[in-house]
Length: 301
Ligand SMILES: [Zn+2]
Image (cartoon, rainbow, N blue to C red; front, side):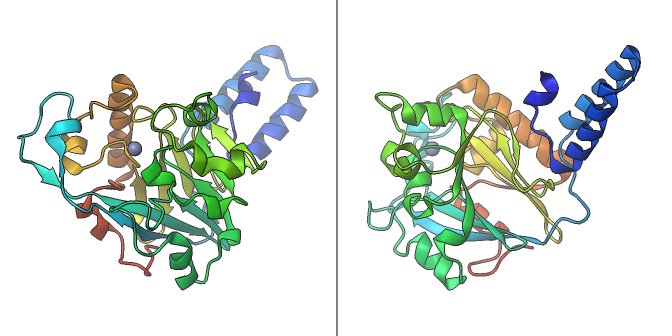
């Protein structure tokens, strides 16, 4: 049961098959138990970066800028952590990950022209500048179902959607959960698009280089993304786990989050992971984090 329920990174699946064939033959019960325990322990370990992983690059694409600063004390702290006049201008970020010859998009920002914060140039036109068409994108992963992260999903209807199960349940509920941009998901809810509603982490390309991380709290199925780059090192795109640096550092939680305890636990997970991997954490809405990646059209390698 356990073995079947765990999604094995490709590096381990060979071991699994070998183990299964041994088990079917003559392995004594105790040995068999030990072998299964060892295998389960291996599967629980974070996927290591495979030596032969193809080159991976990460490009930030601008997907909107706040038309005016947000007074964060009003809605972004449930403990009155900030003075009334602390105002931050939010940015809205999309990302392109190239893995060998395959592409993944992470978050799609606002649709151009949809509101005063929306980008002037849409993601499809930005991809064109990189000689990438939406049909070349194999995976579209989202941190969560809010409009400012899913406003340009429609062009990627042929890609496999990687969405947290809690968010998928929220979109497909009748009526959809408050704040869920259900209309943006039409290719998958109404037109049979391929999707994976993830209840656990997902090693996207099977070599540990790009891993969707389960970080619920902001929404029920909120996710982050670990991208391991050869030159720059690991990068973690944290969606709306926090919206700005002060909340990341101080463990602050906005009053409107779905679940406070889950948010705190997810933040603890990411902070520990970042420290263990010596990773660069990117707060997607924080203007001060834009400079952590090269300016478009350059990519981090
Ligand atoms: Zn959000």
